[in-house]
Image (cartoon, rainbow over all chains, first blue to last red; front, side):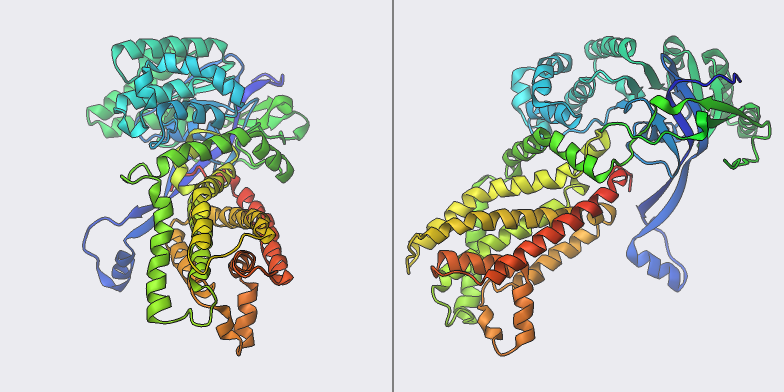
Amino acid sequence: MSAEPLTPSVVVDEASMTYRVLSAEAVQPHRGLRGRVRAARGVRTTEVQALQPLSFVVGRGESVGVIGTNGSGKSTLMKLITGQMRPTTGHIYATSTPVMLGVNAALVRQVSGEDNIRLGCLAMGMSRAEAEAKRDAVVALSGLDDHALQLPLKAYSSGMAARLQFAIATSVDPDILVIDEALNTGDAQFRERTRQRLDELREQAGCVFLVSHSLSTIQEMCQRVIWIERGVLTMDGSPRAVTRGYNLYARAMAQGRTEEAQEILERKQSELVRERIAWTGGERPTGITAL
Amino acid sequence: MADTGDPRVPSGTAVLTVDGATLRRVGARPGLARYLASLWEYRSFILFDSRSRIAGANSVNALGRVWMVLNPILDGAAYFLVFGLLLGTGRGVPNFLGYLIIGVFLFRYTSSAITAGSRSISTNLSIVRAFRFPRATLPIATNIRELMLFGPTLVVMLVLVLAIPPMEQITWRWLLLIPLLALQTLFNVGASLLLARYVARWSDLSNLIAFGTRIWLYVSAVFFSADRFADFPPMMTAMHLNPLFCVLDIARQSLLYASDADPMRWIVLAAWTAALLVVGTVVFWRAEETYGEER
């Protein structure tokens, strides 16, 4: 690696994530006193290691695809990058707060669509005037008519709500953008509008993360791909190489050749050159991204 | 930095030298002063959030906002029946009806504000997870909403006090209600901030808060006179240190009895409010990074 210091947009420094989840006890017979006592509470805490410590650096102007099977830890990594959750260990650094475009841009169900637009804009830190100025663009992108906008959100179909969510979430022009795959929902007309808006945003943004199951989308849009499997960074490289490795693994898994899949995974993980972050001057960044 | 030495990656590590000059930590908690400043920057969010939800607050009931007034009246009627008529706790209290109305209405304001405020993070998780904004805006917005909801209720309370015999006169002391409500609201904000952090962490706690406010209702002289403890000084002292009793006592002295409340009531209430605001803000701010986590 070059000794020249990099000036990156996003640095993930040994970040890991362990969830502690309260879950309802599975319905099954309990043996012994302790089992019964625990069963009486009806809930238990489980620890789930979603992401093992990993490091990587993303430079300005890079589009990074993130792939992995379901439950591999991609979404967790994205939540850490956007600062929605704090990593259990390690840190995430960025030049500005990354913005996630996901299906779960929050909406308040009892409030009208119109008010949700303003609420979302203000929650993203816009001033009243800025929110007002964005309003028409959001409405146009959502494709909702005036009547629908006056209805409380609980009267919306899930498709309408998803469109509004997307429109609100994309009303900012973020420098660092995290795009969630699940956006590809809705009817053909909306999908086309979504794609256009995403293209616009990608052109403006300094750096883009794209989470997707669609390898063709990834190959088309990204110059670099990160593959995360079972919470472990498995590959990091060119779209061609990484998607090929991923395809081998996914096919083996799909056909029930688990041992072979396991072998592929282990080989790829052992081939990976782990990165370690060193800071020029030995000082880690101390400031924090603006809220 | 120690190598984490994961056994599955024997091929070694590459060291990337990064210039951290332009980088900042993502999602980290700002310093307290910066945090308070950011709350001010988000003031339009706070105001809009509290206003937009008033409309939705009662939209599930056919009578809508009428319930905001009907609820405390029905409460008052029930307490009058049980405590005033059946148990006779109102004996010796001049204008017991007025006494009861002020107690019920003002108590309900604090109890519902603290209950809603303490849940403001746990009931708004979707917004918390979707956007990065200072989280303390939510308990504050909830309290502003409760204050605005209390407005019409307050008018009804004053009308009832004026209309139900023995009728009371309006005196200059009615103006004391303004600083009183300001203090009471700040008190609610402080308590909400303090509790919201723990309710966000352990949602079980909201069950206890409902229980706690009920106990508080019974010990705050809402439907009996504090004078019944005159022979038992420790109980009397405890009563005088109860911030909500201070609120009720000041309001009753000013509205019903046209006399000045003991200045100690103001001092005790102001002390509670200041302490809760400071402790609540610091406690809430210290967990700022954790509110979006999955549970």
